[in-house]
Image 1 (cartoon, helix red, strand yellow):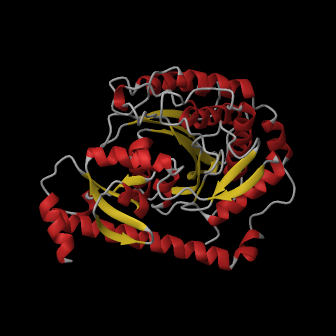
Image 2: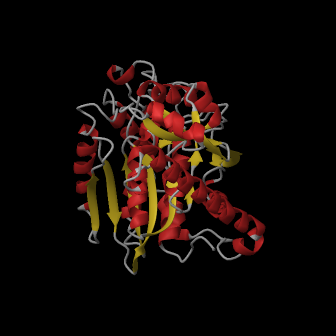
Image 3: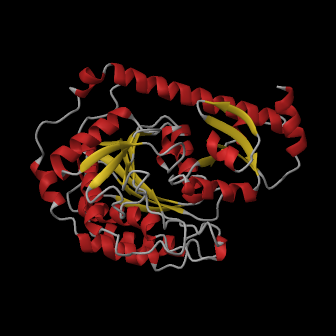
Amino acid sequence: MKVFCLLFFLWGSVLQAKVVVSEMDLLKAVHAPVLMQRQGLGVAQVSPAQESLLIQEAHKKRRCGGFTALDLSAAGAQSFSARVKSSAMKFFSQLSSLKKKEQRYLLHRSSFQASFLNKQPQPKIQQAIKKLKVQEIQNWVEWFSAFPSRYHRLPTANDPIKALKKRLEALASTVSYPVRVDLITHQNTPQMSLRVHIEGSTRPSEIVVLGGHVDSINMWQGPSGRAPGADDNASGSAVLLETLRVLLSQGQPQRSVEFFWYAAEEVGLVGSKEIAQQYRSQGKDVVAVLQLDMTLHPGAGENVIANVGDYTSAWLRDYLVELNQLYVGAELIEEKCGYACSDHASWYMQGFPTVMPFESDKRGMNRRIHSSKDVINAQSSFMHALSFAKLALSYAMDLSNSLRRQPY
């Protein structure tokens, strides 16, 4: 405790620093003194330079993200060190509770599975999947990556967001049931997130979420460097858009469905964290969250998809296996990506069920991301991305028109 307080006494005047949660190996790599650690994660106060190094180290270790800022506002008007300790203890307590829920599911897995697994595909979903178009995905990836950068603090950071909003409003106007397109402002980034809300017909308070981040980053050249982000994450954003296009043609769902394009994921899951916290504080009934972050690079082989197994929900991972068997036919492999590797971690830490299919295992991960070289190239596969659209569409259609939910 004395060491904990002394460190904060020495660092308390470092105004630009932020307190983050990350994996211990990443914090050690950037020489960030660890103030508290539990379950392989550490809490540290990092400078802006160390924050940039965290992004680089995560990339070197084949991870997509790697850290998130600790929320100190909920700790009240205490001293800085007391607020950090209080928030850190709350974080680790929540993480322990979530892991216990996962253990409970795994202990009773066979009986739980019987309550939500299908044995036969639904013809309506099969027909809808046939309407997905590879060319539409490619068009959207080209559109997103044509912006020189989508870095969250650039003066132009909201240009693609506002342009996308207009296009989505035009798409929403083609259906007769309620669809709303919203811009979401944030406290910790000038970039906005974008949400499409499809109102449910009979159970509108139950929400099925699909999301991916819209920002990009060049970790080598900084904010001035080109960051087209074709794979990371124009590809996930594009798959969401094609999923939405087809979903809107299938009539009004029973549950509400929301699509998100999150701001500032690359610098600590900023946009999704604020959204998930707000949904939790408002008591919203989020049935499930699907995250799409990178879908274009088949690093483990064409049509081989990683089913990320950490900081996701076991029942949704099982559900993804079912959807794949019924509607996609890809090879699913188990993989881990570490804490805060994408926006699903924001929802997971608020107690919402999450799942994340990923384009590859870590060994085959796209090495061009976070640089000016993240463009469409010979290794890009839009057929590979189409498999993610099939998963996303079957997930959205099945969950939004059923009673399925986490079985505990």
